[in-house]
Structures are given as structure tokens and as C-alpha cells.
Length: 241
Image 1 (cartoon, rainbow, N blue to C red):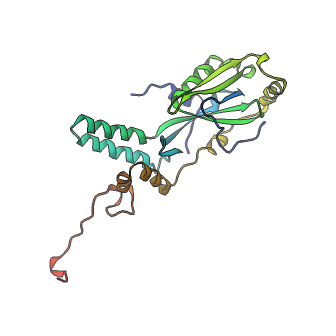
Image 2: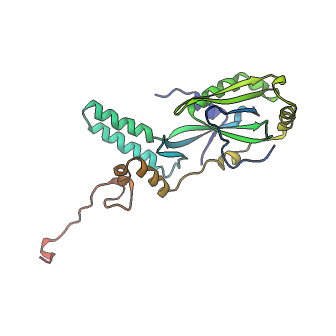
Image 3: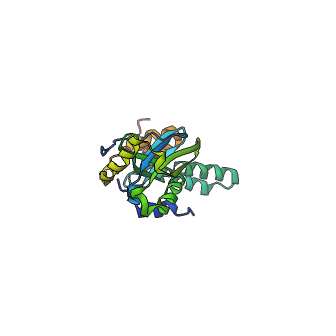
């Protein structure tokens, strides 16, 4: 899985649309959750492409060489071009947008409660809020602790990153902050979190989203992935009736 790290991820996130142990899973980060963290460098934020549809299927990384989600979106956008009435056209374009893979971001930080690596999965808007603070404090990260919080509800959430004063950390957190200087985040850390779904698993997601759409992408269905019915040339004289 290709990832963009540091300045490349930050540039993409900000672009407007036209202990040392390595975790193997994302850190829980639901609305209302707060973490006191140390962030080592602005390079500890990476970008990956992700498909998800709220309450239909969970976020999943997409493969560049077998991206059924993107193919599904392209079919829907093509369908929309053929629809003349505004309401029908908009409905198809909205559906296409839902399933189109979008950039997501992983922030690597040291959790001062545990002293361990933590990995936070962020949307583009959430990442923007975090990056704004990181850029302000880029030269002082070695001496700055933060509180990371998610606020909002449902799909309308954002993340906040607030600088903490030393007296806002207890003795255990201060000790973890100092020890965290030895911790380094590697590409392997981030890549281990970004697991691509197989061709069959992608199809399962798309079937849950729109069965007729999935059938157009399913090689096992008559007509193959385009969904067009295959009509064989038949010699009528050879038929047994």
C-alpha cells in the first residue's frame, strides 16, 4: 500500500477540493475521547486512500491495481451523464460520490497515559485541524505536549489539538513524555495498519451498497464486469426444434 508521509500528506490534506511498542491497530478515537500525546515530527502523519459508506461498510484501504470502489463510482458517474432530469442526475452523482475513495490520514503519536505508540485515523477535515497546530509548533515539538480530542457527532466530526502546559501533566505523563524521545515511527508501522481488501471482499461491500451496481462489476455474473449480456452467434438450423 502506497502512503504519503509528512509534507506530502500535509500538502494533500490542506489542498482544497475542485513506550516504544508498535501497535497493530488504530487507537479508538470516538467523539468525546481525549488523549494527552507527544508528536515527534510533522512526518508522523501519513495519507492513504480509503473507501467507506456510512452505516453500509467500514473504512477500507483501496488498492491501486484492483480498485472496485473507484470502478463503481465511474459507472455511476457515467450513468448520471445519461440522465436528463436534474433530480435523477443528482441522485446518481451523490451515490457515486459516496463510494468514491477519498484520502484519509493516520497520525502517529505517543500516548502519555501508556507511553506506547498510538495511531489515530483521521478524515481530511480532521487532519486539517491537527495540521494547523502542528505547523505552528513544528520547531517546538520536542518540548510540547498536546491534548488530542474528537468532537461532533456522526459524519459531522472534527479533531482538535491543544497545547498543554507542563503543570497539566502528572508525574507519570511527564516521565512518559521524556522517555518518548527515544520512540521512532517507521513506514512499516503505518503500512501495517492499512490493509487492503481482496477483490471478493470489495464486491461484498459493493453488494451491501447497491446490488445491481455490484452485479455489473461481478465477473461471475453473465455478461462479466461490464454487466452487458453476452449474446452468442447461433445457427438456427442447428437447434433441435
